[in-house]
Picture 1 (cartoon, rainbow, N blue to C red):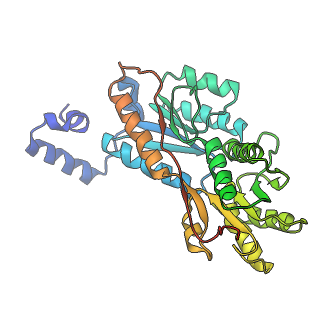
Picture 2: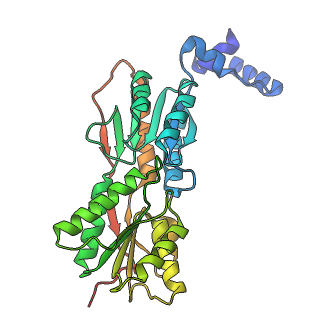
Length: 325
């Protein structure tokens, strides 16, 4: 009973006894069986996090911020990834729910119908991140991808460009970057509203996008006549690949073509010329999600109406975009 009290409520045990118990635990290499303990307490200490990919530094920043916020409250992350597939999201969700997480964090606001039913039936806090749905399943922490696209288009239009393009992935059956598509939709809408053509908007390849995607898109756009004057990459990774392909072809950025990205990845600031981009604080996104969950789990009797937190976005101006003379 004393050992159990030390593990569950250490403040209820006098310091001397607590130290002797911890020494015995260390000497024996004992690890408490939390799965068994959860049968009686109904507390597993796990929070599920569903990401579209593990290769994106921004999603790593989300996991970092979330972990930092949850760790003081003794919660641990169970991470799964979907490769941008809604079918895989549903499969991974079933696997995670079998482990009885106390809350679920998942990327985006587009889910299959059965997945949405599972989330509602789980009866635990659910937070959709990196998007800003008007009607979330439960709670949301993110930003408007649509507005990110419109912001990018407005920035390039304000610099005097006329032939403005964008590069994004295309849908491949069930594999779709819904958030990236929202950015491109916003970008196209802003072009149309301002009287510009969307003929230079290119959807090519499958998600997740990376440098090779940007290089392939550069090859396709730079060979058009007349050539595109400015390009927005749905991700900094694509935008960096675009810049690299320009350099291989002797196309000077920004003299011959200006390039803008999204995500403010570290590599964007280090290439030459450094990349103009749209910044979102993904670490803060994860941190605010964690803080919200700690409060929700600390007071489970108070099930508030949906919380929707907009972390915002901003343009970071660098040398890859130059106004037309």
